[in-house]
Image 1 (cartoon, rainbow, N blue to C red):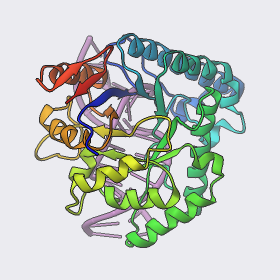
Image 2: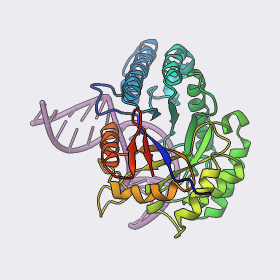
Image 3: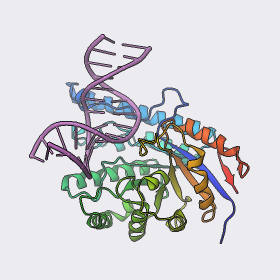
Image 4: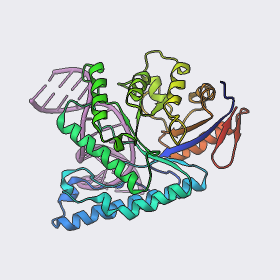
Length: 325
DNA sequence: ACCTGTCAAGTCTGG
DNA sequence: CCAGACTTGACAGGT
């Protein structure tokens, strides 16, 4: 059945260009850590930076909510050097329990949708034992951070399928195998995204379906990497993967940086890169959450919302929410 | 104050 | 087998 209207919410990633001095990703190099002779002091410094990052995240969340933006992706580098051996066995997530609970409260109070996107170094389908081990640990840490915020499986950690290793079929099967070996409580927090070089939207969708998790459709990656599949064919099934979820389907959008460098993200998102897609998408879902992946972060979001709102088929609703007809 | 190089972690390519 | 590209934001060291 055709749905004519679609409600759109926008989100942005980690940093804000509008909030002064609010980096949620301040860090420490291994060298700097090791240059502090007293290890307890060094660990305390890591903890202090992490507290700052989380406090900055809270400010960004307030800023977002205040502007009607109810969708946000956390930085994966809230805790400096997390997972690195130099930190020893200190449990930073536990040590920051109250800080995390604090931002979780802001999320819930404002009915926001948030999540993580662990870095490309989290590769479940790797042939390397050591990489698999650290990848699983990394996933567990991301889930634990969400849990520390009091956020359930509605809130996701979004990952890619991984490398190809000269045999995409085997690599895909290895992903499925590895995924199903994860604790179901971790599995429930995961969603899968198509890649710009390796696994296409169709391939990712097939894997997502077979392991029973929702799929995030990255429109830009799809343009970089596809086998000619039509969005009209892909998108309804992607939407279907979200039907059991609390939140509506989410997609990622960005514009190419330049003609010579298509894969990199531009500062802003061009209308032409998203409007035609929205008219297709609205036939299959009543609601869509769109993550803006642009260098200018929330500024790109604000600009895109303004540009869209100027179109005759778009109506600006309460907050940063749009309705497209 | 600014600029360039380096760092974290993986995959992948080329030699 | 090893070096370098790729990616991203921030540190680190130089002018």
